[in-house]
Image (cartoon, rainbow, N blue to C red; front, side):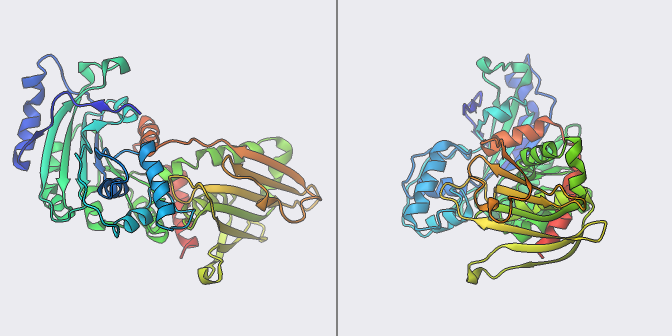
Length: 431
């Protein structure tokens, strides 16, 4: 990671003066330049785990607000020290909530929004606006502005420059500062809102930030699973352009499964699926439910019933019954699997098993596994009489900024129609 620096030391201004300052910025300080005519990106950037790690002295500052290896490693150590389950994601809410109970008062510079991650800088955003909530809920609002440019060695130049705005303070102060935002988002440029935190925190703030026609980018792996899926389904139903980073990470699973059934002699097997099992990391089933819903939608299955199991008995899986177009029932089970080295993204899929039994023989079992896990658990039970197809799904081990860049690079001025079809069904599976 090589963050791109601002051209100048960020200037602190009263919120009311920010729009006028930015209007004059290029004509005054960059007489031979115009800002990039691309897009505006508004980022909710709490970085709770990083803030707590700095406060408790587990890492040194400054606070950057990006997913760097140092923060991930310290988060994994905190999981062990705080006696959390080994499958706890190192940057998740469980870690930040547990660290909040630990004594510590170390402070550091807060540079959230002042450094632009290289993956995003390459896209030449015109304006980056970062909302950086502080652990101190009573902290007053601070507003910082600066120009930024991609570094020359990265192919940057003055014609592709932009500016950054940082609103920093307690959550209440940030809400009071929202009136500053509307004049900062030009009508002639598309505006994206990236909610880079749990979806069930500050729901009123999320509602105010992500008003249409702003395009919303969220991560359904962050927050209460039921809340995440319901919010995703509701926003998609409203017609707003919504993109989900958790869905984006499913791309390799979609492609690999499609390739398995691409040979002509296997295509008929898709009409005779009799069982679907999906394993996910830890206790966040959303990605597994989205994949199951995509499969069901593509194959024309109808949901008949769904139920969860009692976690107190040690079984926190989710079961459902679908019906194929020919009336045959297809059971689904999404099961949590403990992982000693979980992904930084909660609930990533570990493996999938799909069993198909055509009427005239040729039963087959397809097993897909992530690179991080083996297929042994899914291989159990009566595979000897079937054609066994096993594939390892190539996964991109990327930080969230790289995922964001992949999404923004594709344009995505509307919601993915496959996600729009799968999300409401996934929400029903968790009801």
